Length: 297
Image 1 (spheres, rainbow, N blue to C red):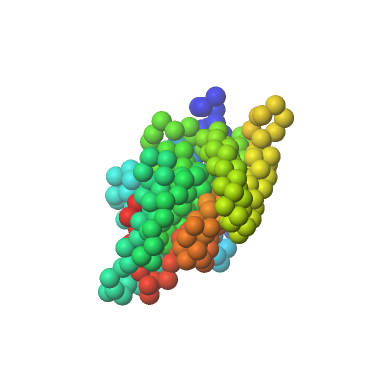
Image 2 (image 1 turned 90 degrees about the vertical axis):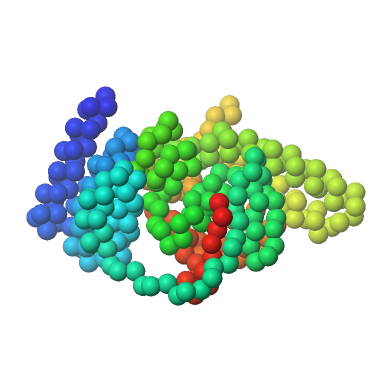
């Protein structure tokens, strides 16, 4: 089965190269994208990175230089992770030169996991938050500001693998099979948080703290809606969408819920992250370069 998939995908990549050679850029982008995602799902990082360079060439031929650069950067990183330095250097020749950063001491921030809790420091304010699936995505983005992460790379990171160019015991990200709305660990975290929210409501009502009770009820409703969305008949996990869209939808919802939780406890950080985190097929944390930050993960 595995060998059959590799042979089929090699043929798909060849069709993409032929389409690019013949000037059919849109078709080439579609074919090369499908082949690249399949190499990722087969855990063949060198082949995926190599094909990303060709995919970048297809985007550039179609006049989309920005997307071309967004494919080249993770390809370079993958080659470096594999110690394939000559290929990384060759790929970087196609990237535009980055502007020099201003020599300004960065603000020191913290987003560190300690057991099941995260210590978060931003703007001289520190809070402790329960860890969530979306916070693991956020951790990876904060670790490399300005770097685009393809959503499948980000999902692989959350499952325990390094992006594109790494080996681990984590299950491969399959671009074709059903993707859970959120995994069993995330569902259990939501259920635990729901129980804590019930306690928050009871305590707030006992203390006649109407504002806190209102926030807790809104939080409870959100959690209930999320659990209903993620669990189907007989308690089985729901799956959504198709292929890449499944990964994009699931990762975006998980990340946005994590940002909402952060904003509830640390409003200034929530506002900062809402402005600087961008989602889609690619995820990126893009802070203002004039106000540099250094996150301790």
